[in-house]
Amino acid sequence: MNDITRKWTRLGISLGVCLGAGGLGSMATRQSLMAWYPQLIKPSFSPPDWLFAPVWTALYVMMGYAAYLVWQKKESAPGVKSALFMFGIQLALNTSWSFVFFKFQSLVGGLLVIVALWSTILLTIFKFSKISRRASSLLIPYLLWVSFATVLNFALWRLNK
Image 1 (cartoon, rainbow, N blue to C red):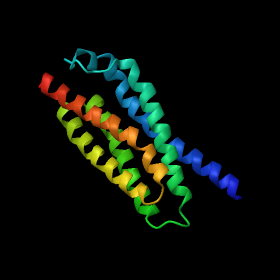
Image 2: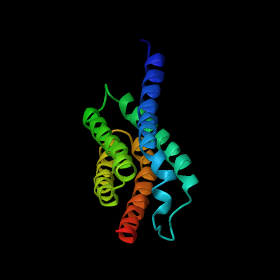
Image 3: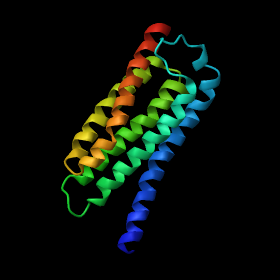
Image 4: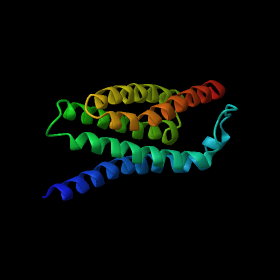
């Protein structure tokens, strides 16, 4: 495989894995968005439902590109395997949050998962920053959105317990 083919393959895999994780999470979300979630008491700062899909899509694309940038450094940078492993953990937690919160309709369970997710995103940013500043910077909007989602999850739990 030549260098250009390798780069495009890695980019496709990186984006595909992240968007696939998002798609899997949205499958868990879809039914609850129509029946359960609209019935919850929401805080005043809760964004409109239509905003979530485009925001998450953009975040998954940035996450995929960040992972690609780190993966591209595989031959030259120490810590790449560890950084990508941590990235995989946070991506699994990201998907599992959708299942816990929406599919199993557990506000407190979602809160526990999202706190773990936030922590692993922060650790991933730290690990990525040692390999590629650009890759770590691409994860900052994700951390900010998950920070907001954590506050929203907490507020939903408090209002609906």
